[in-house]
Image (cartoon, rainbow, N blue to C red; front, side):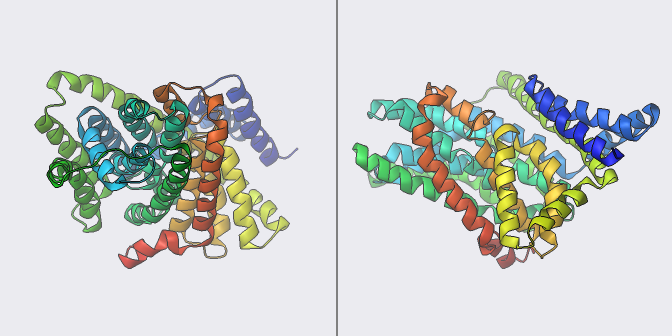
Amino acid sequence: MSTVTLVAIILIAGIAVTLALGFPIGLSIGVSSVAAMIVLLPLNQAAITSAQRMFTGANSFSLLAIPFFILAGNIMNNGGIAKRLIACAKLISGRLPGYLAQTNIVANMLFGAVSGSGVAAAAAMGGILSPLESEEGYSKEFSATVNIASGPTGMMIPPSNIMIVYATVAGSVSIAALFMAGYIPGVLWGAGCMILTGFIAKKRGYVNTQKHSLKETLVVLWQGIPSLLLIVIVIGGILKGVFTATEGSAVAVVYSLILSFIYRSIKIKDLPKILLASVKTTAIVEFLVCVSSVMSWIMTFTKIPQLIAGSILSITSSPVMILLVINIILLIVGTFMDPTPAVLIFTPIFLPIVKTWGMHPVHFGLVMVMNLCVGTITPPVGAILFTGCKIGDVKIEQLFKLLLPYFAVVVITLMLVTYIPALSLFIPKMLGLI
């Protein structure tokens, strides 16, 4: 048995076995990578190389944006911004059937656009809207399903932490271009959910009984504009070159903190708890980056990505079929692996394949992120699925039947984004980012 084959078996079997034993994904990747490294190099060299690769993986200016965006999201979640975004979302959903559920979808899109977190969006929006939907006669299962299905839009619409990770791994990919590329796919995902929700709500008789006067509308807009301005300031500043994505993330923290103090929804004594929660989340992400960097080095050293690429290309040379195979693999991977480690592991494998026929890295980045977003709403490790169920006070098995039509809508949207490059590249090209 060749060394390359042995290393591949150790990596794949090691991750599979450790996950089956209940290891956290980061520890699973780390243990398997170190075991493979020992096969490749003497023990002392393996230890030194592993430590160097972990440090190199985390030593990235772009990755500094992640802890700041995480902190900004936690501040918004506790600082009254979420409630104001929901009020704005109600105006947008208007007189649509199932307007509270529609509000949930729009609010998830808006909150995701200022926090970059699908889980935070589903937790904040679902927590506020679920009781209101119950009062209007909506079933708990329907409310939770809509919240879960639309939660990942926050990972597609910028700023997005997972896009920052992809840009770091892919190399020479503009974070600003990726951010702009996410708007149309993210909005398409949300719009598809809204259309389906409207159809189901109309069938169930969930209608809007509220009307907003002009005065109420103006008050809501006046209160919501400062929160929405965060998107304009951060994304606009990045596009205009006023600051980088990393600096923009720090601006998001300062702006959201000032806004929360103005709203008097956060006190000084609340900050340690918010900071601690942000540190815990950041530590998980950074540890995943570190251990995945070791695995990436091993795969590059042994040329495993080239072997996998060769195997796929030996089956078919059709870009259409290769993209279909990659989509299927990523959809399966996303069901049992969080997006961050999946991006770190599979970008070096699949990106060289799609580049052989000229697929733009930004386009592929959106395809990869969208595939892995689907995994966040599917068992067994779907973070948004479990969050939505906990917030909605329902069991996962109660939602399977209701979620299926939403999965169909999302997969159709995914296929459109995969095979129509303009959906991802139009805005970045228009802005001269690519």
